[in-house]
Figure (tube, rainbow, N blue to C red):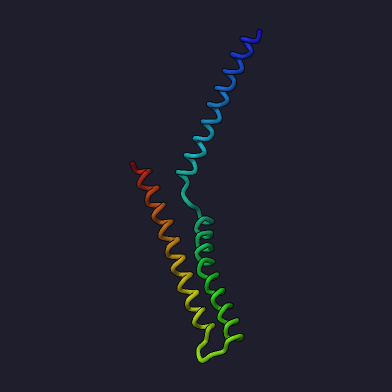
Length: 112
């Protein structure tokens, strides 16, 4: 009796593992073949926007604080605002270039 139950148990496990593997394969293929939608594009624009806005606002805030505590002949606020903007733009440019490279590599691997 125990041999039959063990054989049945092994067959059930292999059937279950094949079913799980098939479902996982379908999900992976669906993700690879899916084209990015509108929400993906809007999300990307939001990420890029925030990657520029955050350093700009941090630079402005630090500049205001420095102007209030260490007044001088030049404006810390304006200088740090511009520096923050430049850093944010470089950050966004780097991030977009990295994403483009990954998309290009993924497309090339699909074509092969």
